[in-house]
Amino acid sequence: MIRKILVANRGEIAVRIIRSCRESGIKSVAIYSQPDRTSMHVRYADEAWPVGPGPSGQSYLNIPKILETAKQSGADAIHPGYGFLSENSDFAHQVREAGLIFIGPEAEAINAMGDKMRARALMIKAGVPVVPGSGKLTNDDSKNLKIATDIGFPVMIKASAGGGGKGMRLVEKPEELNSSIRRAKSEALNAFGDDSVYMEKYLKSPHHIEVQILGDTHGNIVHLFERECSVQRRHQKIVEETPSPFIPEKIRKKMTDRAIAAAASVNYTGAGTVEFLVDADMNFYFLEMNTRLQVEHPITERTTGIDLVKAQIKIANGEPLPWKQKDIGKSGHAIECRIYAEDPERNFMPGAGTVLHITEPLGLGVRTDGYIYEGYEITVYYDPLISKLIVWAQNREEAVQRMKRALYEYKITGVKTNIQFLERIMNTPDFVQGKYDTHFIANNEEFLMKGEDCKYTCEDLAMIMAYVEHQSHVDKRLRFNNVQSSKSNWKEYGRLHHFNPF
Image (cartoon, rainbow, N blue to C red; front, side, top):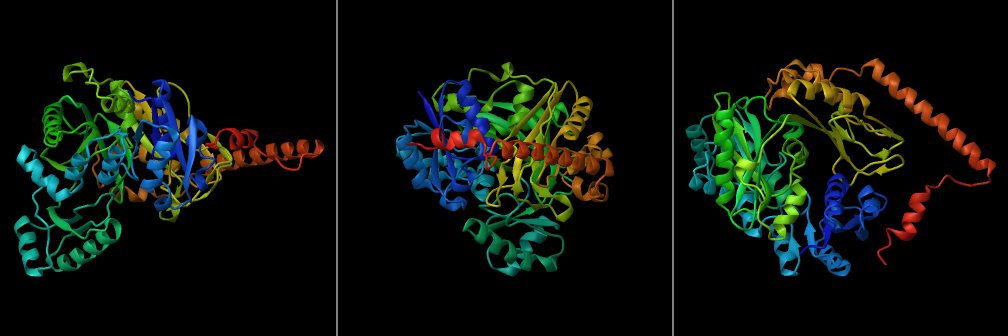
């Protein structure tokens, strides 16, 4: 039985995993890089161990150090979260070789779904529809042109080992093909160490729909319905919702059945997501499988009532799933917005700085998964995602209104965020009506990128002034008491008693 879990991650997902550990009576071990020594996940875990300096390659991607820390801390298992090492089959293999439990699928399943061309072949064999495409492209320009002509322009060049938009090129004309392939191969090599690329038919105005699945070690696989993930910028999701306002029940049933078939084809265990592209005629095609927990998993938790992290832990413990498919239902509508420390008016440039003030929204049906606090310093080392805002309501119209209210209440000063950009998304007619696809941002760019509303700017200024006035009173009291600096007591206590693993 798992009694202590090392969380091989940071930020909001580390905090979220630790919460489920605590509710399950399982001890948690946080790891942290030098810049993250005062991060919320370090403060919240039962133990916290340093693993290296700021660059992730020397800390959160340092497999030998993480395994050494797991052994020294007495952890039974490792949860990788998402990002970093979560889909690294070598890491999963080494964890198990070290006699520890990897809370995720087998390395073989990660490998099978991590290679996009291999995954396509597996899906075709399993009867899952795939986008018309090619195998691995060579450097033969004439052959590549023939393949593209047979598929039909426009086509999309994709990295076989890719993800997150890296190594992707849209090619609309034959004369652009060869140069696009070379650029995609170069980017794929730099990003993944593998320049293998393939070609797919480009679907115009598609929807990005994913199906959440759970599989146990006893051969049982269930789905937890779908999520609509079509609000994207540069192939990165910004807003997700469930159920999809686009997919009718008949197509939902077909997609979820095919998602289970996809997972069964690799004997999948744990939590995973099968992703599809759906065209305007309701034809759906396999896109990829994410062999890990997804950023947007909370909206599925909210509509099904199932804690996905707890389910992952129980599966890793060898327990059978406690539900049959008929036992899993969904209730209401949930929406998630990703809060980033970035500046939309400067081409969404990630920002660093100290959080001066934060007010998180509260009330019925509102959940925030974050890790920052007042006085926390956001660094340039990691992904700018700082929080996820999740709302639930009995129907979609109410959920959209609740998200508008929650975003209005969400106030962060000291660093730039995309909160007001998200507010504008919620007020865009296409989104309000549920009539959008993956081109939503481009189609509504003028409305979404308009200048800041004065009422919000003035409100934020008022909060900053109130904070400054409050701080001046604090400083006066400190000087009166002959105190030289306004140190945080909990941080000082933590450095002495909590962060030191020895």
